[in-house]
Length: 59
Image 1 (cartoon, rainbow, N blue to C red):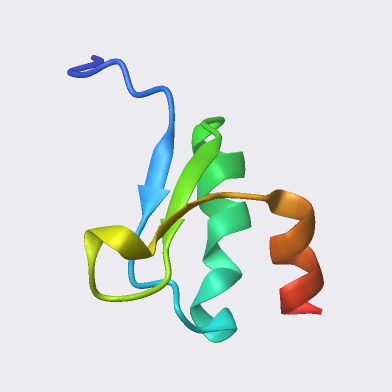
Image 2 (image 1 turned 90 degrees about the horizontal axis):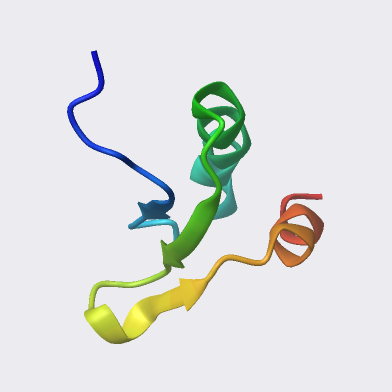
């Protein structure tokens, strides 16, 4: 049963690449794109998610 129609993810507290690998698994498992990531403590720290830039940072 679907309770909500989720069409994108926003992941917060992603200021370290060690936690970042889970992004790929979550998006893949749920078949939902990651729209934005939070890289700090405030609302101004939300950024649009760029998968290529993120993958480069992980590697």
